[in-house]
Amino acid sequence: MTERAPLTRKPTLSKKLSAIAESATLKVDAKAKALQAAGRPVISFAAGEPDFATPQFIVDAAAAALHDPANFRYTPAAGLPVLREAIAAKTLQDSGLAVDPSQIIVTNGGKQAVYQAFQAVVNPGDEVLLPAPYWTTYPEAIALADGVPVEVFAGADQNYKVTVEQLEAARTDRTTALVFVSPSNPTGAVYTPDETRAIGAWALEHGIWVISDEIYQNLVYPSTGSGQPGDASALTRAVSIVEAVPELAGQTILVNGVAKTYAMTGWRLGWMVGPKDAIKVAANLQSHLCSNVNNIAQLAALAALTGPQDEAEQFRLAFDRRRRLIVSELAKIEGVTVPTPLGAFYVYPDVRGLLGREWRGKTPTTSLELADLILEEVEVAAVPGEAFGPSGYLRLSYALGDDALLEGVRRMQELFT
Ligand code: PMP
Image: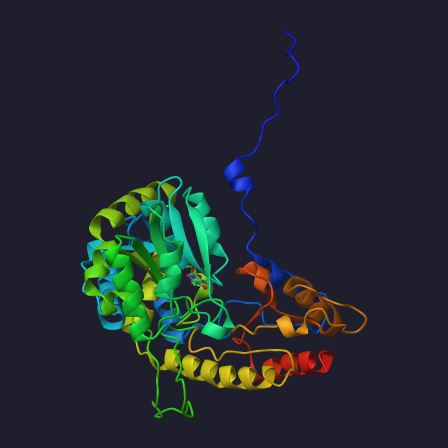
């Protein structure tokens, strides 16, 4: 036997992947869940998911799908034709855009749609305008496409909504795409139809792709009024950017899914809609990446989109009630500024007024330190603003029961008095 020469080169990891940070929201949520599992009475505002069970008729549709041998097989990578038809109908109804099912790809959650959207339109070095605070996945997905995220920050004073002037100031000849998320994660901000139209017209004028994430489209609340069923006063609607500016459809990719509206986060079912050429390249990618999404989840999503919508409406009403509760309770803490969110299930208080002050012997100077303090001292989990852009903010999800919600905020009120 010949002896092997000693290794001179160590195997290394991909630089691109090594540069990716773990999802901060999942990390905080996992920490809270681990403490809960260890018996600690932690109240978590960290999760980005509804606390409801998926409606039974959707579960039943999935159970029935399990008994059809056709679902044991590979199906078209871009999705079951019947589901793509249903998604086309939903896109027309909720986003005001008529599309052919061939312009749709069913993905493993909206997250995969986000990833594929950037892969489809970004070339190395291209700049992608990213309104901040942003959902934590965006910068990583842009970087994975070799793009450069360019943050455009809008604070509580502008209800976390960027203006055309800000976008224009950030535009260069490398600007390829804009991320537009309304309602927004993490802030719950919803752009008005006029604001949406202005941004859409600007993107159209400059030939900029828009990646419009509409995953919270069906979770929108009244800006005023009681929020009681039947009281539609000042009901806000998140007008799709392609409805506001129809000519923009040729350069817009819509991202959506069933996770948030139907309490289906674990089913992993989303989709992307776009012009044929972009969808074609993204579908080619998906055909090599993962092929079709689980057929059972696809048929569950079909039931969700085509079945009765009253349970989803009940979820929305419950979120609206909790939204009012959490905003009014957080506002009682001196040093906290809380713009009223109009969509999704997050509230994004500006907590800079709490920083640099002493609380139980500690003086947090960043929202990261503040979130740690809150978890350690009163066992309440919230995601620090650093996960979404600048320090100085907390994201609290109000997708948890009313009692837990009240108890959690009460503990924070007690800590900061
Ligand atoms: N977009 C936004 C803005 C989100 O908040 C999320 C979930 N946190 C997603 C997309 C992805 O959702 P999913 O992959 O669960 O469908």
